Image (cartoon, rainbow, N blue to C red; front, side):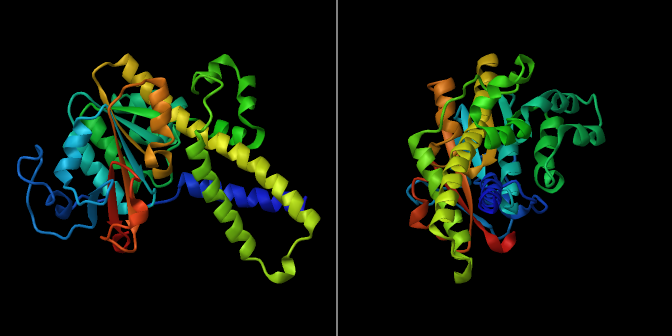
Length: 338
């Protein structure tokens, strides 16, 4: 039983790490961000002095401009902005990109809100309920005020629709404990908050990447123990079996996140032809065009998409070869300004 509890704790920590649902730091618009915009790039373009704390590259590591990124987002049906949820520079940049790509056809889609609070979000955007009740009823993340409030307020002031894209966390937790088939026992009323069941499995490439990360954290945890704690072969076998069981269920839970966001976007675009979507999500959900993008292609094939991965790096502003092909655009941010 102790091995079971230990392994459960390890995987719970890993799932939280992958989802990156952590507290961030305040966002603030600064002149340096907008100074990267060439004249004529957008309606809010301006030139001021300031030191940029991000650098934009294409998938091969060639330096790109903010203007090129903005144009790519504008010309896409769906743009995926993958972030690390504690990256303050990313949050400021996302707010700027929302403003610079805004038009009457733009819809914002957020991982940070769950499908069962869509009506609460709609009521707030329409000015029917106040912010206090919105925050209480929509289960905002702990870092909502400093990191995501600017996105919602801009949308509210400019009539931008927002999709509450993510699966309710109680059902993600349910899958992580009981497996994906457990969702079939839910009522039909409840299932409307989820993608059609059974939802698709993760692709082999996504599964391989997921297992690599999880195995690394399991190895790191085991390596941190002293030699006096080396388990017997029987305990090792038990831990391995538990590891594989949780690996399967946690991958299913991860896939529920991905398919839910993909289904939310696809449903919105079907109901609103001609619109385009900017989706903000944890980078693991869209890096290498895996996760949400590949499920979206199954739900609604033929869309033009742009993937963006925002990566805080100690080596800023250098492009590391390991980042190659991570996304259509890779934005490296300075960890010194976090």
